[in-house]
Amino acid sequence: MRVFEALAAACEELRRHDVVNSRVDAEILLAQSLGKTRSALLAHYRDEVDESLRQVFFARVGERCRGKPLQYILGRQEFRGLMFEVSPAVFIPRPETEFVVEAALEHLADGDLKLADVGTGSGCLAVSLAAVLPRARVWATDLSESALQVARRNAARHGVERKIVFLQGDLLKPLTPVLGEGELDAVVSNPPYVGPEELSGLQKEVRDWEPRLALVGEERAPSLYARLVSQAQVRLRAGGVLILEIGYSMQETVCGLLGGGWEPLGVTEDLNGIPRVVSARRV
Ligand SMILES: C[S@@+](CC[C@H](N)C(=O)[O-])C[C@H]1O[C@@H](n2cnc3c(N)ncnc32)[C@H](O)[C@@H]1O
Image 1 (cartoon, helix red, strand yellow):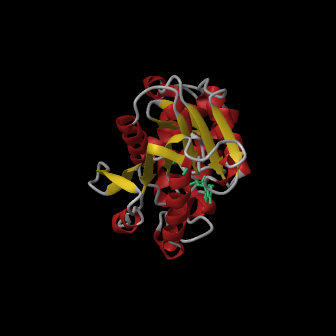
Image 2 (cartoon, rainbow, N blue to C red; image 1 turned 60 degrees about the vertical axis):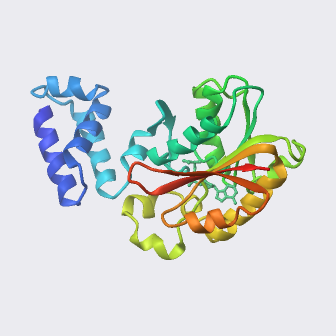
């Protein structure tokens, strides 16, 4: 079987399983299976595909047909120009979450910063901030130990493992034994915010493959955000900033949690014009 024949057969199979972007996915999976770039693959589209590699390729196409996200098959996802390892233990970093990093950078002056990333998942927020803020130290928490293992590898991959302490536990509670109150300069978080009743309406790639703990968490979003805001109020220094990603239509609920102890810094919209990131300064 030649490259173009393998691609045509895979496309057909992916289309039969309603995979959108079937051609692109087929090309990416074949390039990965052959250890080539996509452009090198297309430049050699008449080459014969080795039988063992053909089997690897069609096994991956089969996974994609069953709904496994391409990122989990490839084991990677880019975030703010850095490549992150991902596995089904972690939420796949989304482009809209890059606005959390942008908002944090907008409101932080460089210096000896102490930051917390709550619900770190792959570590995309903690690692991105540690990579661009030379003197920052980050405490990153997650309930999931298997997510933290991936996050630790991502920190090492980008050379920031000495700047980040990964702690297993609920929200900011794991910081209690290691950091005093009022010490943090920033708390960033992209918490789980999908309602359990919304799960069935999600794409099967998300619903059936991404960790439930990352999507719906262990409690309803308004209660989790409320606990996070009050813990952040204790942990942040006066003037420290809280940067929270929010779900569709959550702006009023989350902004409503910010009472007299907070100065609102604005709500950032994502590229689709959806209010996505709430920023506030502790007074
Ligand atoms: C939506 S994912 C975000 C992951 C990553 N920060 C990102 O933006 O891609 C939410 C993360 O929060 C973690 N999580 C859920 N409930 C938590 C809690 N109560 N305390 C700490 N982490 C929690 C999940 O395990 C998951 O890794």
